[in-house]
Length: 463
Image (cartoon, rainbow, N blue to C red; front, side, top):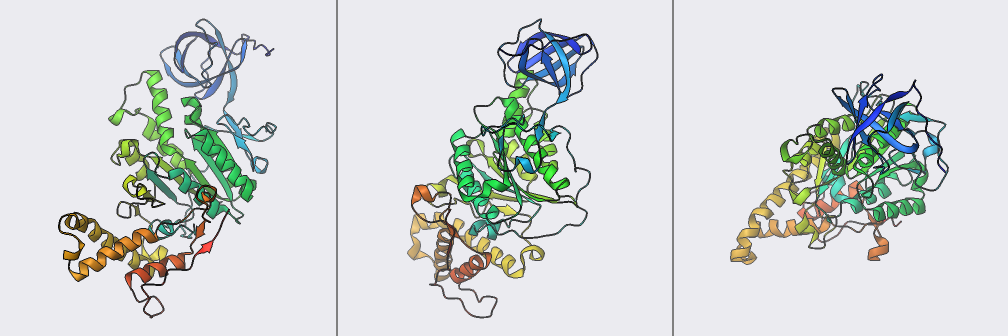
């Protein structure tokens, strides 16, 4: 039998006067609790109410776990505490929900916790910017969206085009044999995928240096909206207190916005452009600001972004993209051809593609590849009408080179080896650049002509 919660005169706040979905309105008859403070309901120790905002004499609260035992007239009291999560070395290898409760069947950690709503480090950004390239082993990412320490990269695509698998492959490749700490945040995605990732990280030993937070699709909108800040809190601790460089993975950041919008609907707030809640974009920026680098350490983030109805112009997708340094766009038509990763080479962009970061050779190759792919895109409609044989020799050569590039950027994933039966491939950045020079028939950096027929050497990095 649950321990009863008694509300005395010292912590009494008021009574519940209205209920609507996750929204609970409490009439305040005593001192006002703080915003984000957790409130207790008399006789219901398992219920968590978080103060969201005030309207007149009422406190609008979120029923975090969607407890069904609430009734109008029940007494509500202050807990004088806020949502907190465990932080520190003891959390490595563990899995938690947005409230810091374990999901892996292991003991609860209460000895060292940090409040989720109190971000640290936002006002102490790194003063001197450095550009350290991190190799992912994925040709298309290392070439078009270089993975730079302390920066943000987004993997953007609709449902079923491979965002989660590509994110898992990056976790496998970037964190393997590294001493850095990884924080994984699962927001609103399938429970099966989270379990598969957990088992994969466990088998490869990566889990020992990883903290995982989940608010999956079966969780309430409140939990889904809180799991991102909870994971950011864990990352901030390792950055600020341990001086670590953090790899932060979130799948899916769009679900964070979606959860905030669902809560806003419960509150009866008027939606803004695109039907999204009026405060979601400011909340998104607040979360992105927390994933920053300071003089103590860095946070490098990979964020999967779902595109509703494959519409890149969606206001939420645009708002997320503006916060990212690189945007890798996955295309459904390319995925249907069996090409993985299904990257749209023309729509993929990166602000980090400049000679000072990647070098002149890499930058020049990107420029040439983009020109070839642009020409390929314009020739497709012409070829559909008159056929490839009617093209000029130069156009035919560029068209064939573009088709070779599309195939070249496709590769097998280590995390999908148990499904495809093919060992995962890992390409160094040098192999990627040499392979592209090979296809385009460009004189390489050593001054010699590259053979068009010889494919680059592939290193196998199977799980």
